[in-house]
Every structure is written in structure tokens, then in C-alpha cells.
Image 1: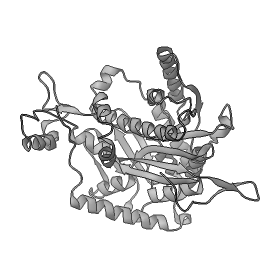
Image 2: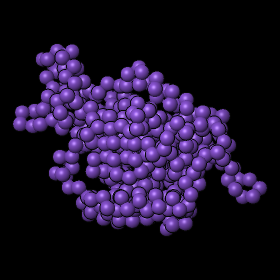
Image 3: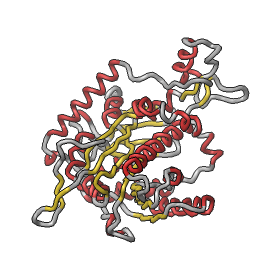
Length: 397
């Protein structure tokens, strides 16, 4: 296998659909937030319980079962994205101050899927926080297991809390701690249930983050979700491994907050989520001293970083071999690899007898997501002792 490829990008008509969706959502974002319908307190509490219960009851999968999962390569690809983000932003800290002790907040940490990534990045302390208490307990156990295997490991703290409603600083062992990095992987969208929850989440992210520190993460791309849903009469779309259905009628407009959709992903997700209007997020983040410095859909993230991190792609098996090696089967049906077949047919077979790729079904899920990064800038204290952030004229990336 001498090369790799992924399914084609969206067609011109699909790209235009995405652009028109962006315009609609931007227009909605520029309107008054007072006109936005947000869920009441009872509904918010109910949704929080549903989310916590879902992740608390999500079974821990063994290595063999994960390998046989129909989203095996997509999950590895997602881990590659997270690994690259962690490496890129820990490197930025060390480029400025090589010997600096790196402290991290891993918000919406789940079961601790990024523990080994923080270990490889050689950080010094990580605080893990998540709404699901059982997940936090499993995260702690994973940490203890990793500590026994590795010997030297970063120090850690574990907090079970609703990061969209609770003040995390009050729960830290050291409330004066300052973080160099805050990471939120595949969990930030839950705070867009309401404006109050989005503000609480951003406050938790920003208030202990050092100036020049970074907040980065991954989340579903609302523009992509809506543009795909628009092509269906019942506002839903999917394939054999996932399904998404909007739980509001776009004919009535796109809610800035509380834009709920049902997301079912094979063995991983089966609960409602909320669209994140990224223009609103960007504006809100500025109020908390966070300047957007990077965002990219996963397809573009792959283009941006696959050259530098090519070996990592291979090491964590982000792509399967096409055609399948002797004695092995493809993850999907043959029809899901037409892109790889066409690529091989266009190349010299002497040099390209096999290609690393992903099934069309898995790639359709992966390209729902986007990666982002914000940089914290300095604030000033007003007469009431409150920190006020004023966006600088320029901010270095």
C-alpha cells in the first residue's frame, strides 16, 4: 500500500447548498436573541438526565469488539484528529517556553479516551470533568491502570459535574489553578441548548485559561447537518451506521439555541444533540476573551495535517486496505469503495496495487464534524472588579 485516498468532496450543488445554509444561519445569528425560543428549565433538566444516563450506560467495549465495529476506521480517524490537535497545541506552548509545566482542563472528558494522548504529549496535570458520573469513575480507573503501566504520569483530578450549568472552579482542589490548554472533544454542542448554558460552558473554559492559552476541540458542523437534512422531506438523513433527524421544522426558522436533532451512531451515540451556530459561538467566545484562530471540517483538517502526521495515520489504522488483503473482508459493501476503485484504475498498477481508504458510509459520518481552536487574550479589570475583554487589533496564531 503506497498511498491513501478518501471519498470525494461534496459536489458543486452540495457545496452551494451548504453555503446557502450558512447564509440562513448567519442571518438568524444577526437577529435578536430575545426572539429565540429556548427550552424551559424543566426541559433542560430532563435533557441533562437523558444525556448523563446515555453515557453512564454506554458499555465499555473490548479491543476485539471495537475492531469488529462498523465504525472502527472512523473512530480511529477521529482519534487521529484529536491526537493532532493535542500535539499541535502542546507544541505551541513548548515553542515559547520549552520547560513550562503544562496544565490541562479536559472538559466533557467521557470515559477518558484521551488519557494516553495527554501522556504522550507529556503534560503535567489534567483535570477531567464530565456530566456522567459513571464515565468519570471509569476515566479515573483508566488513569490508575495507565499509571501502573507507565510509572511516571501526569497528576490528575476527576470531577462529575454538568459543565453547562455548574461552576467548575468551585470544584477544583486548587481554585487558583491556571490552565495552558482546554480541550472539549465531541461534547461542546450540548451547551447550545440555551444561551445560559453556552455562557456557563464558555465561562468554565475561559476563567482559568491563561492569556495566550488555547481552547480547542471537535463538534458536529451545524451547516453540514442542516444542508444534508434539507434534501430529505422529513429532515433526516443517514446510512447503515448512523441517522440524524432534525427535531424542529426549519420552515419556522433555525433556532439560535435549542436547535435539537436526534443522533444515532452505531454503538456510540443515541441521544438528542443541539446545533451549534458557529457564528454565534464565535461572537460569544469573544466576550470571554477567546479569539477564533482555526476551524476546519474534518475533510479539510485531513488535507491540512495528513502530510505532517502521515505516520500517525498509519500507526493507528485510520484507513483499511482496498482491495481487502487475502483472507480478509472489507468493512462495508463493495459499492462503498467506488472512489478507491476509480483511484486505482487511474494509477499505474505496478505502484498502486492496494490503497488505504475508508468506506463511503464511515466517511459520511466523519465529515459531519469539524475541528476548531480559540486563543485566549488578556482582559482588564473594570471598576466593579469584573474582568472585561476587549478584542486586540491583531492576535497571533
